[in-house]
Every structure is written in C-alpha cells, then in structure tokens.
Length: 162
Image (cartoon, helix red, strand yellow):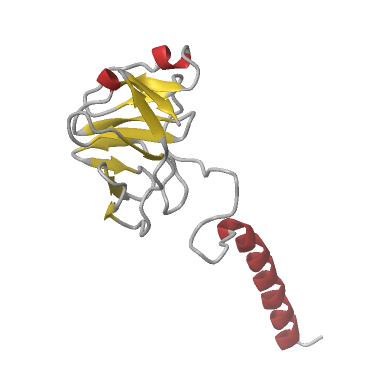
C-alpha cells in the first residue's frame, strides 16, 4: 500500500465512524423534532417534588399528588407567572387573573425540560429559549416552534389534567 492510499483509507474509516456516531445525535425526522423518546440531560438538578414553584410561588405540589390527576390549586399558580410540573411534563401559567393555560414543559428546540417561569416567559436552561406564558409562542430563540398546548380543567379551585 502507498502512503496516499493508507491516508485515504484512514480518512474514510474516520468519516464512517463519525457518521455512525452522529446518526444517533439528531435522529431528526424531517420536521425539526426528534423522534427519540428519551429526554436529553439538562443542567438542572432533579427536584424531589412533582412541582417546581416559580415566579414567587411557594407551592410544594404535595397536595396535588394526593388528589389523583389534580396538578394544583388555582391559588398555587401566581398571576403573571406559572408552575412547572416536571413529572407530568406540563407547565401551567396564569397570564391574567383567573385565566389558566397549560403547555408542554419540553422545549421545542432540543427537548430539554423548561426550568422556570419569570417575567412573562417560560424559560429553558439549555440554550436560552423563552416562550410567552399566554400562548406558548417563542419569545426568544433558538427555538422556532411554540410549546404545544396541553389540556387542563379548572373546576372550582382545582386544576386537573383533562
């Protein structure tokens, strides 16, 4: 073998190994979303409770765990803010007094779980995407798609997954 063919063989082998490694990275199905069911690791520390209080809320989420599919009491969701329910992968917001919205807590950019609700946005810690609490629309990229809406029911003071 000549030096040129050895180098070409090594480059080809290296490129093949790189392609095989990268094939599992994106697993992009053509519409910008990953078809993988695994959620990428995020820099956040796992919480021991089902809910992550945000925007001044001090709710622990323990009351909602005892009531089946109830997520929270309406009083636990701060007006102009929201609460993230990591176990259910849902974020519930209250954009204006008495108006409750729910969205997926999985960022549409790379699949990280959003970490906080503050200043009118739902914020992802991984790459800085932010989404409006009123409709889940992108407020700041790199995400280009809104958070998908989730169905909830507000009955009296209880918010449940619909």
